Length: 480
Image (cartoon, rainbow, N blue to C red; front, side, top):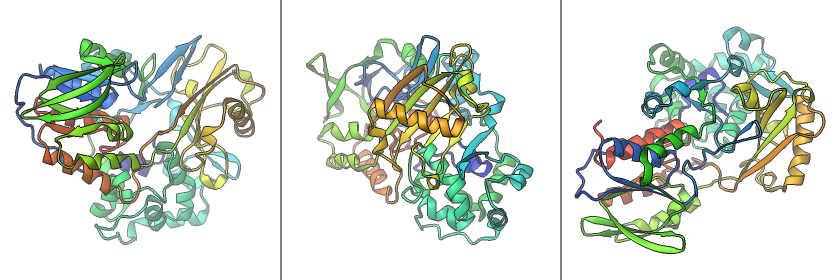
C-alpha cells in the first residue's frame, strides 16, 4: 500500500543512492541484450529503441510485465502484483505520455486520501491535516506531544546505519513506530522495521535528518520547494499492466517471452548470450548486456569471463519473504463498512493474520460488477511467512474471519482468487551495502555489463522506471 503519513509521503520515496554512470559508445552495431521483461527491462529497452539502438529483451515468463499482472474476468479486474502507482516523478509522467497512455490515465477517487489503521481492534483514519492529528484517537496525547519535540532532537552520525525501527523510535517515539511506521513498512515491503536499513531502504528519510536535522522541518521545506508532478495515485482502465504491455507493443518482435537466459559470456569486444526456448539452446551475439532481473534469477545465470561474477551467486541471500495476494468480491450489501478510503493497514502489535486490505473497487471504477465490491488482502511477509503458505481452503476461512471482524463482512465471497509470491519483495536490510557493492564491483570491472532493477535501485514502480532510464543511459544510447 502507498504512503499515508504526510511526513512519510514526502520523505520515503525509495531511490538508488549510487550515481549514474557516464554513457559509453557501443562497440558495434550488434543489439543490446536486455535480461528481464519486467517494467525496468522494458523501460530500458524502450529508451534504447527510441534512440534507434537495436535491442532484444529476454523474458522467461510467457508474457511481459514481470510482477505487474492485471486480469479481467466476468466484470472483475484483479491486480495480482502492484495495484496502483504514484505519479510523483517526472520520469513516470513522461513515460506514460510517450507511450500514448495519457488519455487512459485514471486517478484514484478522492476518498483514497483516507487511510485506515487498526488500533485496539478498531479502524481509525490516519490523520491527514494538523487538526485531524490533534483530534485523532490513533495516537495518545503523550505520543502527540512527543512528536512535537522531533525538530529539536539531535541527528545521528552520518555514517551510522540504523534500522528503520531504531531510527523512528529515536526521532518519533515507540507509539508512532507501532501505529504509523510498522503498518506502513508492512504494506510497502511486507517487512520488519527493525530489520530494514533506513540508509538503504529509505535513503530520503536518512537524508532529511542529515540535511535538515529534523524529519518534520525537512519534509515541510521539501513541500514548499518541490516541483514536478503531484503525488497522485493512478492506474489505467484495464489495470497497471497497460503500461508494460504498451512498452512491449512498441518494441514488437524485440521482446522474446518464454526464453530464459542461462549463460552470459564475454568474448573479446562483444557478448554471447545463451538462452533456452522450446527446449533448444540458442547462442547470440550482443554489443552489451543490461541485467534487469530479480536477484534470484540473476544469481542463477552462469557468467563467463566476467571478473568477480562468482559473487553474483550471493544475491540469492537477499531476503524475499513470501506474500500471498487474495482477491475477493462480495455483493455490496454483504459489507458493512463504507469502504471510503484507500484501504486498511494492520500494525503488528494488533496481532492479526494479515498485513492489510485494499478497497480495490473504491479506488478506481469498473473493478467489480455493478452492485458488488472488490477487496485485495495481503498475507504473510516477514511478519508471518507461514500464513502465506496456507492452502486455498485455509485462506478462505482466514479471510472470512478477518474481514468479518474488521469490515463487517457477512457470508461467502462471490469471487475468490489467490496469487502466491514465494519470493515477493527484496528486503533492504541492515548490511545491504554488501549486495550493492557486488553490483558495483562486477559492473565496474567489466565494460558493457549493467545492473539495475528492484534489488539495486529501489522497490517502487517509479524507482524501476527510473532504473530503466538509467540503464539505457549507461548502455550508451540515450542522451541525458
